[in-house]
Amino acid sequence: MLYSPFPGLTSRREILRNGGGGFGMLALAGLFASESQANETVRVERHEFPHHPAKVKRVIQLFMNGGASPMDTFDYKPELERLHGQMLGPKEKPEGFTAPAGAVMKSPFTFARYGETGRWVSSVFPHQAKIIDEPAFLMAMTTKTNVHGPASYMMNTGFMLPGFPCFGAWISYALGNLSENLPSFIVLPDPRGLPYNQKGNFSAAFLPSKHQGTLVDASQQPPIPDLFAHPQYGFAQDHSDRETLTLLQELNREHAAIRQEDSRLEARIASAELAARMQLSAPEAFDLSGETEATHAAYGTSQEPTADFGRRCLLARRLIERGTRFVQVWSGPQGAANNWDNHGNIPNELPPIAASVDQPAAALLTDLKQRGLFEDTLLIWTTEFGRTPFAQGGVGRDHNRGTFVTWLAGAGIKSGSTWGRSDDLGYQTAEGKTYCYDLHATILHLMGIDHTRLTFRISGIDRRLTDVHGSVISAILS
Figure 1 (cartoon, one colour):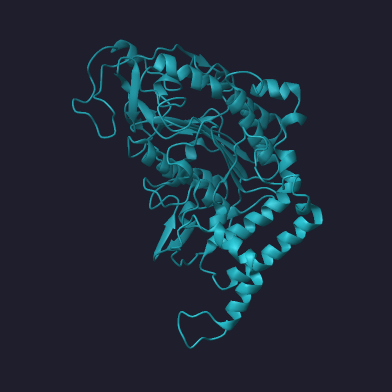
Figure 2: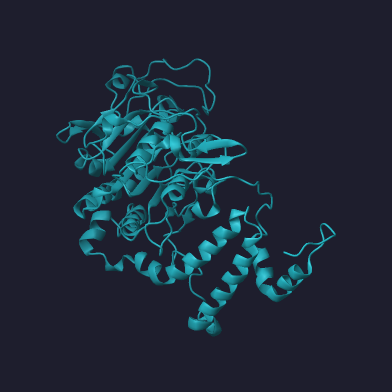
């Protein structure tokens, strides 16, 4: 840029550049119209990844939004039957509880032992009971809050406040793409709505913007809108489309060259280039018609209540096969219904949401194993917190940060293993307390990353996913 003796005034070259760009620059400005222009300069700490040989290349995470009840799913508590109806809960309402604690409430569902491991599983999960020997279980997961938003942030970003990169963004930042034709991090939300915190759970925050999750509504046709120009615009097809993209990219890169501290434009450029490549790859990846009838039947894609979650689990498998590194599949929107936030009536509210994910989750695990994808793929089932062993409003359960369950299966995982134990009521952890920091450290370890060395410097602080915490859970590793 030419030197201007009048600070704040535009140089002659800048005027010519803007004039030559014309509507291209105007369109570029429009891309940022809805975003804050405040953008602090950051210094990136570059490291060589992986730090050690990786066992996992890609991850599928199934997230049960709302707080899945452990004592009604995987954490059998016979003491609840013996103490049913007794007032043993806290006398004062804990922070984050929505009502005072009621009497001890036994599970309304039957439990039985399954598999060679003899693990207890509730009757709400008959399909997962059949594959129960495959996962490793973390039976004493805990968090720092009884509130959905902060708890969801913590499980996804390692912090209870907004403004920090999510797990998928860190993985994308560290390891990049496995394929140039699909995003490295894809989010498949519940079509009924986004989870608590909305898109904050998928944010790249202060990492380069291109690492944020690509949100795909799999219930729409097509799942990715505007990938192709509408047929009525005949001039925007084939060669003219390519020429327009080329010109726009030239203008974008010239614009970015003098604003290197702002990662948003680079993300826009990468997104446009990826969109062009996805015109060839995405239609095939999102087309489930080529799957066999047996596969569709296994995932339950043609029956209620499994059709939606089944399609998204099947799509997750297809995406990681084609090079997406991290896929997150959500069950349940935010709010008081159609999720795992069962305050009002556990007997009536839990079975429908459990049935919607049970068969697809088991089918996904089986499918990954049969296709040999477990050699380098990790499957995770989790939630943001648990629920109380005390009744709320008669037969509901309130929020409980004290303990909940997560399972992992696939590459590098010791099948049938267990880490941690909750207390006899399922109210607090008793042994092997495990935070999100430990879960994230373990998954990063499997992907060849030392979690203490995955950092990004901002405002003079070397930030990391696990903050200043975290230990690899070696007991569940093969």
